[in-house]
Amino acid sequence: MSIKQAAVRTGLSEDTIRYYEKIDLLPRATRNRSGRRVYGADDLELMVFITHLKSAGMSLEVIKYYLSLSLEKDPNAASERLVLLTEQKELLESKIAELQAAHKVLEHKVEHYTEVCLPEKLRPQKETTPK
Image 1: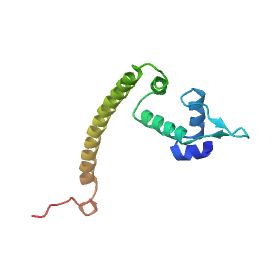
Image 2 (image 1 turned 90 degrees about the vertical axis):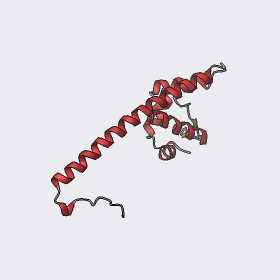
Image 3 (image 1 turned 90 degrees about the horizontal axis):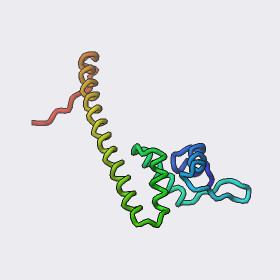
Image 4 (image 1 turned 45 degrees about the vertical axis):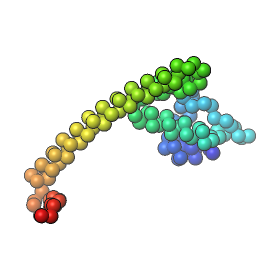
């Protein structure tokens, strides 16, 4: 598939895909006869995986290092990959907890200001449990 199709399927921009190739985060795409990039299912899977790692807060530098470990024959490489993923998972869990706490505060403030600012007839009705 073309770079445009790959961009649509992965949610990455065409420029981002080209940049990832330029910094060797992605392998160089194969080219068709007219010199246009062509991507396969494995390429798309890698792009999506990189996107998830990036969304989890992993830097491109660490992602690149993580991916380089898969190319090594060293038996310790898998353990090192596990350490990287575990550390990132723990950081992400911490961030999720922070975001949940912030969400709770904002939810409370919105409820408070809704009561203060809106006339009673325009306020959202609170759910009541039947007795």
